[in-house]
Image (cartoon, rainbow, N blue to C red):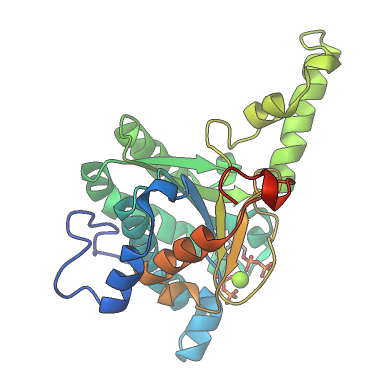
Length: 272
Ligand code: IPE
Ligand code: IPE
Ligand code: MG
């Protein structure tokens, strides 16, 4: 084992203490609980650059990113977010140097194995999207066990996008619909947005209202292309290993200040 994490990924019991930084408390107090996004998606980016800035190797950046997952999860749970989806490994990330891919796969197994009991105690349901069949056996086994164990939880659904890309998912969906039409099981007239939603790996998850990307990059990198049609995008220069609860709260505060028009005019909105 080259990677070890012993700290719990998630301690939801006491997210606010007298030691909680005042900036975090102040931001949290500004959040309107009635308008919290049901689903937040995060492109966790910048681990490699964080490591470089600290004179460490890229793998150290990934290790240090685990704490940020805990922070994002506790913050989301504290304000009542029901779905948190994290882009952890893309289809394109398989093309990274083999040592980095191997380390990421090992980190996945270790993190899930170490943290799953804590996640379960805190009511987290673990879910995945992506081509998880392409993960190494250890990863598949750890994920299956964790998903089975937490299947009955409903406080928050934590979805890990693993070996995921939106184009991979869309291609799969198109093939499945085309096959059903060819076999006579489906009429072309039955193909609508709802059917497409049901055939994507995100079936059952509401569309994210808020998409966060760290590291200063302002692109989507093949994440949830169909599902983010009307998501609010929030970019921060913070590298993922430096992401803390206050950043998620800040993103939600900013989200709540935006006017979501969905193609209407301002005057047509219920509370312009
Ligand atoms: C995100 O950080 C983690 C993964 C993509 C697995 P990066 O590893 O992409 O870090 P940068 O973008 O090179 O700094
Ligand atoms: C996107 O980050 C994928 C994940 C966060 C898992 P990348 O670092 O792979 O994206 P690009 O290459 O900068 O677009
Ligand atoms: Mg990156």
